Every structure is written in structure tokens, then in C-alpha cells.
Length: 153
Image 1 (tube, rainbow, N blue to C red):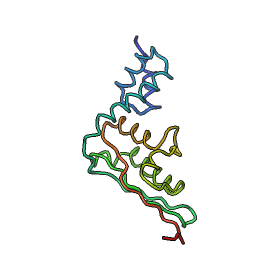
Image 2: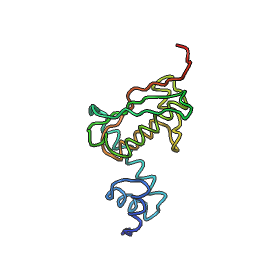
Image 3: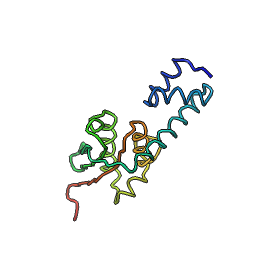
């Protein structure tokens, strides 16, 4: 089935997936935008799984300080290249994850990855994998720490 350029453009704007992936998704879904979105998401996660054996030696350390100045966090989000480490979506995800650490106070990496992402519809782990699949590079959560004024050690 031939799909319109407008539909491909709309799916690309919504998902930020590659144009070829958007076109294939719309063809598979016979022009159904809802099914195409689902297909793009699944394909992105599958691509992320292929990257698991790669080394993530670059990244970004995001910080967040609550408006009160009494809670703060640092979070390390890792990727393969400095090019991705400078990517706007990667940086936004790191900053939002740092905010989530401050707000939700996860006690372990597994606990944090299982939490529902505060800015999305899936958990933190799937959110990271979705961006990894979309960008085509391994992205993993590194370390994180949360600080609170007068917190007992």
C-alpha cells in the first residue's frame, strides 16, 4: 500500500523515528496511524535489544535541584558516542530522570528502572530502551544519587 507523505511526516513528528521506519510502519498498518505508532515503538525496542553487547563509554551527568534547594540529585546516563551524548533528546531524558530521582527517591537501580516514568506512559527501563532503539545506540542508566538537607546518614 502506498502511504502519503503527510502521514509519514506526521508519524515522524510524533515518534521521532527514522523516515524509513515510519514509512514501513504505515505500510504494515495499511495507513492506520495508531497501529503504525505501535509498530514503530516495538521496532525501536527490538533495535535497542540488538545493542546490548556494545560498550557505553560516553554519556552525560545530569543534575536536578528542587526549587526549595533542599533536595537534589545527580544521574549518569551512558551511551556509545559523544555525538549521542550531545543529542537534545538524550540530554532531556537524563535531566528528567535526575528529576525523577529527586522526586521518587529510588533505593536501587532495579527499583528505579521499574518505576513508572513521570514524563511518559511506560516505566523508566522501557523509556530508556525506546530512546536507545530510536537513536540506534546503546543507552543505559549508570549511577545516581539523591541528596536531602538534614538527611541522616
